[in-house]
Length: 116
Length: 116
Image (cartoon, rainbow over all chains, first blue to last red; front, top):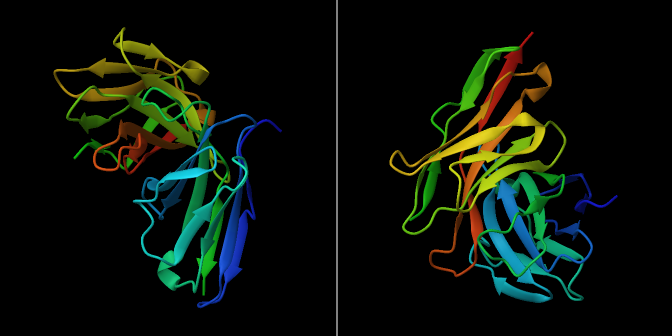
């Protein structure tokens, strides 16, 4: 399809394990964003890539969280030593241009992470 | 700091009646406002946006939104609700305060229930 895809759609893991969440943006989209959405809340910004460069990681909650986009397309969000408080929906979005305020971000279906 | 408020957790409306989902915002500069809809097990879908120009913005699925600068509001409207419009609706403002990235700041969402 032509939309943003994310995998896995659901991930159950045990506390202390590492997880890797994948995002495949719309083809040709320059900008890629990661958000985290807790139950009953709106998505909250985690990090932003322009091509392969991570321009902003101010929303990453701590150093257990990291992200990469090595070839400027697919991105991986990695959470090390997961904790129960990391349980949430993780959403990826992409936009065509370089992240201007008028640009629309297109979201993937999300990965629901449950840490036991 | 820029923010968005959605004062109603849930809105119920009868099918065929007009619907309004409320959103107010607080920004320090020009407002860039967006509405998204979230269906179960699907990603956030873009509905419409206000960047500049006409205060009445038309979007997907027959939705429209009215930008009111004096009331700092951006309410979502539809003249005649359908049962299939039942979903979770998010208002968002673009913000780059601090980090320089135009990320979304989302409201907490309003669940719309259209009754047959």
